[in-house]
Length: 85
Image (cartoon, rainbow, N blue to C red; front, side):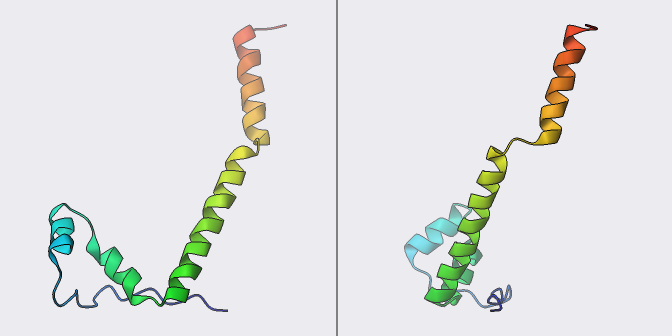
């Protein structure tokens, strides 16, 4: 199944934004991200969330695995600090 297309960057903003929307814009929030999310269907938003969650979980797992290269570098650094045996 093909992922949904990204929302158009040139899509028009909301016709009549409310005071909370204008306050968020004034505070520096990028409301185009909200507009883009609102253009997606609920199922598309769920799928996008699932993809982001899977990526976060895989990155977290990758950080938990000890890297062989890192272990070798640490062992080498320890040996260098101790000097010749």
